[in-house]
Amino acid sequence: MNGVSIPPSVGWVSTYPPTTCGLATYTASLLGALERQRAVAARSTVVSLVDEPSASTAAGVEVHEHLRGDAAALARTVAVLDQHDVVSMQHEFGIYAGDDGAEATDLIDAVAAPTLVTYHTVLREPSARQRRIVTHLAARSARSIVMSVAAAQRLVTHYGVRNDQIEVLPHGFDPRLSPPPEGVRPPDPSTRKLALTWGLIGPGKGLEVAIEAFAALTDLDPLPRYRITGATHPGVVAHSGESYRQELIERVRELGLQDVVEFDNRYLDAPSLHAQIRSADLIVLPYLSTEQVTSGVLTEAIGAGKPVVATRFPHAVEVLRSGAGIAVQQGDPTEMSAAVRTVLTEPARAGQMAWAARRVARDWTWPVVAARFDQIAATVASESSVRVDVARVADPRQLHG
Image (cartoon, rainbow, N blue to C red; front, top):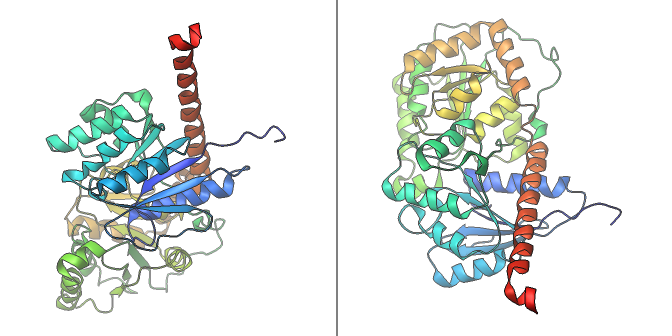
């Protein structure tokens, strides 16, 4: 084939569109970038984790559905995955069946193909069962993939994973988000500045803290705008409806911030979301968790060259050391308000942050991330092939046949 090597075929295990969650979006984005950047096509199959049959589809990609907790489904899934050179398994405790998603260990034990496990959560203080699950997956996988140095350090320190078995592969972002050349849009001091938070809405996002922070900024002239974009998380809707969003709306009324805080309750497609991100002067990530080692929203914000004010979750602390924003204490509206004020009222400082963001994110576009993933997959497939050849030579039937 004119000297062009055939890339390894990959079987993917994850949630997947039409499911609306970060893992589904991540998998679809990485797989799509991989398919587009490969010079030679190779088979890709998605095993989508579902609670009931749906209509998972993807142009040019074969999609199978795995009913969580169904023993017959597990056998079918293994048969599908073992038709590939490599399996890419996304891990989050809540997407597999069983206590803490213990079904994930059954799956990796049954699959013969070499497996890459990508951890979207790495807890600093896991329960005993959570620790057992992660250490089991790491022991059975060919590589453990994480998206931040903080996550890699946790795997080593708290789960005993060897450094040489870990790959740090950044979360990607759509290159269409990359900012235009510097100086294209000079700041206009008469225009109301827009701060933006987006993503699926639910308790833990810390949006009530951000709203409190903007209550201390009503002395600014012109008034800033704070837009909260995103649908309520489907799991939150199933459990408590729209009560959290209603609480936020009521708090805005109590604080008299109707002219400052606005809600866009839609789950936006990529072009619409990108338009909102590009129009923002500042991205706010007020998350309450201290455990988050991966944030797609943070990656996209930095990729778009936007200053960021974020709470001190591990991924934010790691990324914002670059100077691309300000990290503040979780649950502290006063500290968050001061940081937002700095970005909105000091154009030179905001410009420095935007420059730092552009610099740090230059290797985070999905095509670059996909090319790196392809290298890892090819290495693992090659190692597996070598092990099979060695096993055949070592088989006495081969030696004396």
